[in-house]
Length: 384
Image: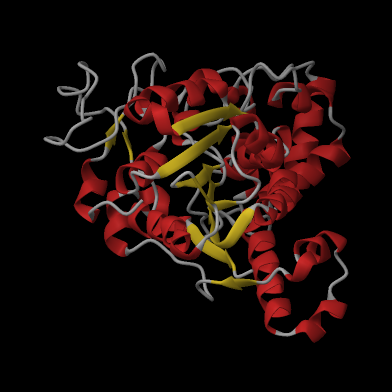
């Protein structure tokens, strides 16, 4: 969000114990800045920094100059993955005529966003749900069918990984939940681990985590369940099981020596990612949801995406490139088999990729915010 880059380093502090200790966004000395009273002296208080703030909001807002999505002098935007509202706040601060719809699947996080965006409450509507259902959310909020700009910052929120009770991270011992919406009644990660077959677990770890030891980890989990009568309840139950297998496979079977090839991430990381993606149907939301978003950008409007791993980024890249290529050369339309893409191109709609390659965080930002290292920022503009 196009605020001076110096703002990034000082933006947000948060409490990672209870959500009622609200996150506050801003910068010391500016209106709206505040810190939870316990943070000032707590050197260990985690910092939340929106990824590629300047670049993201710059792309998000630029397309509106030529857009037709003006109603009563307002310009309409959507943040499809609001989180704590960092990108949203910057957009609203820079654009006093902006009306914003904030969507998030996690009602707990959305409640914090409402508090953080309170000063802009007259220009913000909130919806608990998925960006994939954008048509419904737009109607409910009284927004036009096509808007000036849409942003989705994919994956889990930093809060999810820091809150042990949410069960997203192997770092903290907590219940194996991993659902974005804990009220949904959907199966938890524990439910999956305690009921899925070896074949199904292997598929989850391989497809959603790109884990090379997917089969070995799946076998170990089944063995724990069947032979030792183990019920997986906590994150450390799963972490400990994976670590035991990883340690065995780190030995070179022929020499008995430690394998010199070391991974730079913890052995459980990919399995936890895979379970989270499976539990929340994240890739279905990406593959189908982003197409839905493209339908709802007005001529001149922009769809901005931030992805953190190839499973998220790949379908977005392929979609944007296809829409761009067919818009440039009508003859390429016959090469497209996906009916949903033909629907996006109906009524002579055309698109272009604003940047041919994904934008990556600068080295300076990576040093300030290591999470930004894997971020890939892309932008699609509707021409007609």
